[in-house]
Image 1 (cartoon, rainbow, N blue to C red):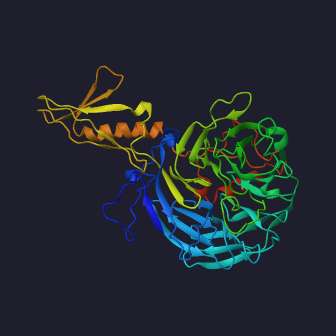
Image 2: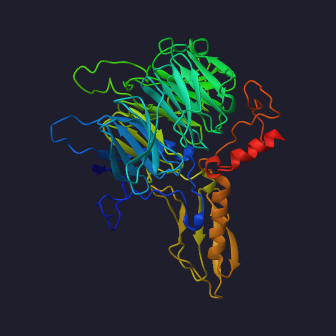
Length: 526
C-alpha cells in the first residue's frame, strides 16, 4: 500500500523495514508523565498529515471505498473495512500500514475491534448475514454469530466487557457475548438500524428511523420495556423536517453520557439530551456534504460501486473529551463546539473549517491520542500542526538564565511536535563567581524577575514548570458516567438524573479497570 507523507510529517532518521517514516505519535512524556495537549488547545490546528492509497488494481478496477473505521482500545491500531472485501490495519504510532486481511468468501463491513486488539468482529455481505469473529495475527475464525435473517446495519461493542450489539434489516436487535455463539437476547423493533452503548455500558440506545424515535434500554434488563423513548420528530421538527425519519447515519454518546449525537446524511446532525430527549443543538453542515448511504437504505448498483451506493460507519463523531464534534465534508472536515452559544433556533454553525482536497465520508477520532482519521477511497491521518500549536496563556512564561559577570541570557525552548509533547530544553546555564546557579523566573506580564539562588537549581526550575503543566492542562479527561440502579429499583431512566452527582470519580478509566463493573454491581445489591 502506497503512502504519501504530507507537509508536516516528521521523517525518521533511520527508516523502518517497510521504508515508511514514523509519525512519532506519543501520549506520554519522559518518565511516564501524561500528555499535555488538551483538545480545545489544538482542535483548530489539525492538518492532513499522511495519505494512504491502495495500489492500482491490475484489472483496471477503480479504487475500493472505505466502509468503516475503528480503533482498538489502547488507540494503537486503526482498522478499515473496504468494498473490495478486505480489511486493512494501520499502526498509529508509526504511521504505517501493518497488514491486510481478506474475506472474499463472506465479504466484510462494520469491522470492530473487541477488547483484545488481536481479535475483531465484522458483518458479512455475502452468503449469509452472520457476524464473524476473527483473530488478526493468523487470520483464523474463532466462531460465527448466526441468527440475523437480514443484512446487519450496525455493530456496537460494550465499553468494558465482551458483550456487543448488532442491528439488522430483519427488524431485530441482538445482544451477544464473544464467548458464545448464541445470542443472549433479542429485541423485535421496527427498523432498528443504529445502536450505541453509553460510556458506562449500563444503558444502550437504539435508533429507529422509520419510527422517528431513539429508545434507551437498561443493559441488564433489556427484555423489559425501554426506560426512555425520545421522539425525534417532535423534538427536532423546528430545525430539519427532511431527516426526521430517514437518513440516520450515526448514533453515539458523548464522553459524559449526557448527550447523544444523531448523525444524518441531510443538512445537519442532531444533539439530543440523553436524559430528557430534547434537542440541545442542530449542527448545521456547510455546503458540500458527503453522500454515502445510510444504514438500512437500498440502492441499485447501476453497474458498479460509487460513493452513493456504499455504506459508511458515519461521517461525524465526538472528540474524546465530549466537547467537540468532527464532521466530514466533500473537501475536508468541520468542527462544532458543543459549548458554544446556541440561539433560540438551536442551530450551531461550525467553529472551525479544515480544508482538504479529499472527501471525508468516514470519520473516527482516536480514543487515546490527539489524532483522527478520515476516509473515502483513501485513508487520511490528521495530526495537530506542531508549528501552529499555542501554549496555554498561564504557561506563556519565559525562563531566563543569567549569571554574574554579564553572561548572556539564554531562554529555554518549549518543544512541541506531532506527538503533542511539551518539554524544556535548556541550551545553556550561567554560573556565578560563587559557583551557584542563578535562575530568574519572569512572566511576560511581570516587570521584575524573581531570583532563586542555590546549587543545582536547574532541577528546581524544571520541577516548577512541570508542576504548572500538570496542574493546568487536562487531556482526554473521562468524566463520570451514569450511576447504577440501586435496591432493585426501576427508575426512568435507570441512572442518576442529577447533573451534579459526583459519585463517579472523573479520573477513572473504565476500560483500564476490568473489575469496575463487578464491584459496582455488588455494591448496588447491598
